[in-house]
Length: 54
Image (cartoon, rainbow, N blue to C red; front, top):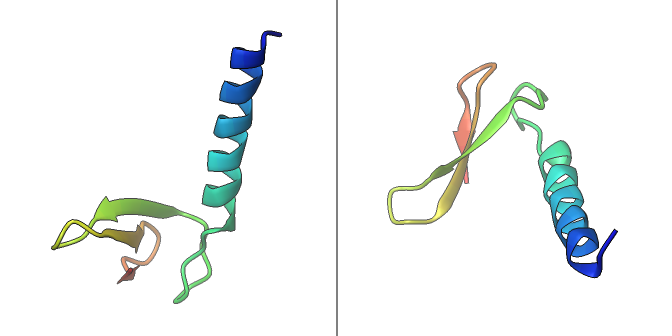
């Protein structure tokens, strides 16, 4: 594996780990989507219960 491919794999793994840590503070579900907030910030919404937060 080339150094570039290794770096890309590391980036993908880091992104997957970040998503895995996210869970809904309301119901605890891991089914969370990242969305753009009203003023360009990042917000999250639980696709299981509909709770949203930023």
